Image 1 (cartoon, rainbow, N blue to C red):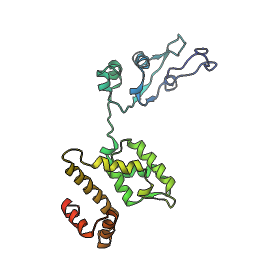
Image 2 (cartoon, rainbow, N blue to C red):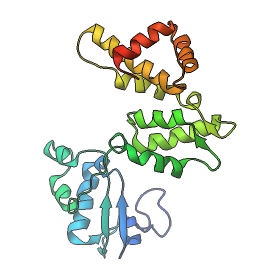
Image 3 (cartoon, rainbow, N blue to C red):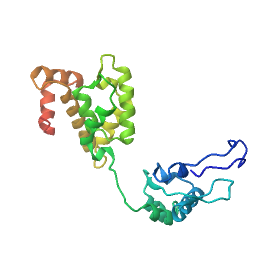
Image 4 (spheres, rainbow, N blue to C red):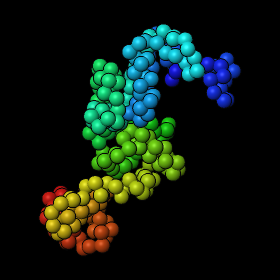
Length: 235
């Protein structure tokens, strides 16, 4: 970020190197994952922001810089500052205009647009996969969506991404996320059963032939399937 002068340390580039602040002079510098900065670097960053000057490593000359800072992090800097894991003075210096971007699970309406943006040309999602993505919890946020689409597109030979092309961990996670985690064992099992049957019902047509396929895949009779549909109010 701050650059260094010639001979500042072993292996230093001859003639030194310009730092990011100097490169961004009269412009904007984006600092990603700023919550991961060490305490020492935080102190150096604070000095630059307060004084408007930067001193290269190994140098003694102060260089004037006029830089607008945009910082991003996945951590709660306010909470970190209260626990002395992030400098409070730097936090308040940075926190001029605060913008919180909700996690992907709280803005599922964005998923179709992100899919269109990240999906390779001539590829598309099946209806089941799109419904699946709308239900998934997305612990890895947008990065996970992007990586998943890259992975699945490698397996989809015909250009159509189906459920079988998704990473196994995702298909397991959606069941775990949706299972009721409190109450009696009977209620937990019933919750898991209801949600699994609901997922199966979405894969087939709502006619009698589709219901027969669902019952067959579940290993139960058609009459039992209809009883469970009524019991869990799934139809």
